[in-house]
Amino acid sequence: MRLLIIFILFAPPIASSTSLFASDTIYYELWDMNSLELIGGHEVTVLGDPQMVNTDIGDAIKFDGDMDQLLVDFNPIRDAIAFTIELVFKPDASYPDNPDPRVVHIQDPNDPDEKRVMMELRIDKNNECYMDGFMKTDIENLTLMDESLVHPTETWQHIAITYNANILTTYFNGAKELYGEVNHSIKIVNTLGKTSLGARMNEKKYFAGVIKTLKITHAALEPKDFIFIHEDTVSSTDHTFLMQEVKEVRISPNPVNQELKLKMFGIKNRRCVEVKISDSSGKIFYSHKSYFEQQDTITIDTSEFQDGVYWVSLQSDQLHKSVRMIVLH
Image (tube, rainbow, N blue to C red; front, top):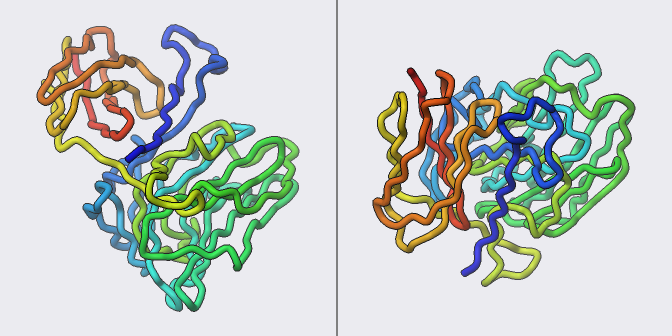
């Protein structure tokens, strides 16, 4: 069994004040759906009654297709001129109640031009689904949709949109489907904005199903760099997805002053884990790779951290786990 998860450092060195990233770093946001209060460290407005659920690949959020929606107070595309949006999710067989759900909608709700990027689905009468990728810039818009490119519902799926050099491309389970040109003059979308999950931002076209992970990268990735693609027992155009999480991560003390101790439980084999500490904006304050075994403890010096809320993230070939940390001197 081989699992491909690519994690890329996404911030410049702390001492740097420039907004330009180094040539070997790419900014990204990885949102694991394990909270209804914060997603990716960003505040969330909950509409309807979406539910946290435990699935075979970890915690996720269930939307019932009846007024359920999450509005994340952040636009992860920001000012990127190239990007990739990836989603790991399981759509319900929701025809005819929810035949055209909007799953991801990124837009500034106060933008009079309504510039936006959207991941949509269509559910046909056979309860198969096909993707609709939509983008509207300051001068053009484009819809990428083909009703013949159908896929099953009620199973984990991965969809992706990439944009680079004015070309928008859609992928389903790592396979390229459609592409087209959509130009922009000044802005792709407004830098400020929000991300709606489970419906259009104006509370229409609801999604029924489960959302596990959303990742937005400020680069047009190749399918080999997409997340959670497992290829051993399926064809190249029909992937399944897996995320195995450790049973528990403990940090102490919390709030922390001078020194943080971190311990993981549930690791079956010795593995290399990258530990990163970042604030809610995604700026990294600590990054180090260590080999962990069951109940190993590492110690991190936090004496130079400013007071505030941080996220401790652990990442490896089969692991992504984040815990909230408060620094208080």
